[in-house]
Image (tube, rainbow, N blue to C red; front, side):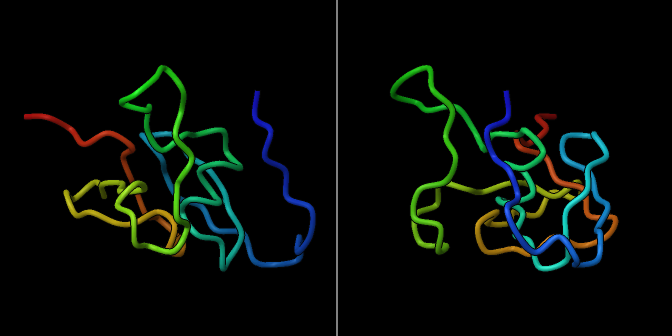
Length: 95
């Protein structure tokens, strides 16, 4: 069950992109972290327990929110803005 809900600013342009192959939407100006949480995704699972992680510092300093682009680049979800046609993976593909 997704507990994240947008409370304000519904009048921004819609952005379409992909997370783990699934088409999702966000609003212009949203970070990847915001878009991921609003679309029901988690960043990763905790290595210390069985709980999901949802970001830690939220300012690009802690290394907790790395995601991978479809091309193999790494982005910080908390400080990267969504963009049309972006495709990210929450778990890097292993060859």
